[in-house]
Length: 128
Figure 1 (cartoon, rainbow, N blue to C red):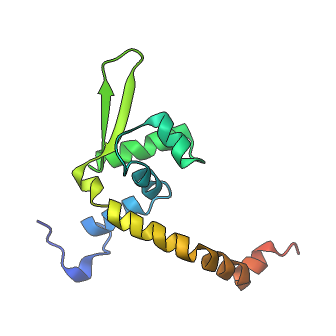
Figure 2: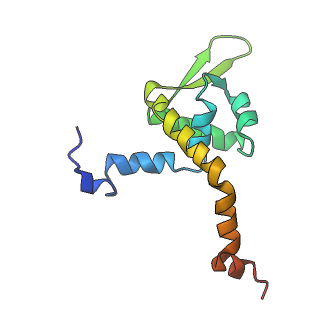
């Protein structure tokens, strides 16, 4: 049981903040979404996600496994086969990730339009 109250959610050592930092990582949500339909092999995840290196995927999977969101199952076969899947805790993120994905689909163009219209973006692209 946590000794933190509702106003302490973003203190540096609060479990809720640590959880938010874990899922706010660039690749975490994408990897969790890739695992949301069932067990997947490493190479399949690479193809499914696109743009992620093997090393980064391995690091992300290890971090998610260490935090109890993903399990790794190595089969005693030749050639070796390893699959990753969500734990029951990791599966609790499926609905929030789906909601975030739908928001991104509905609002992605608006976000890009705002970025294009931003003075900060114009200054960064000014070749002076």
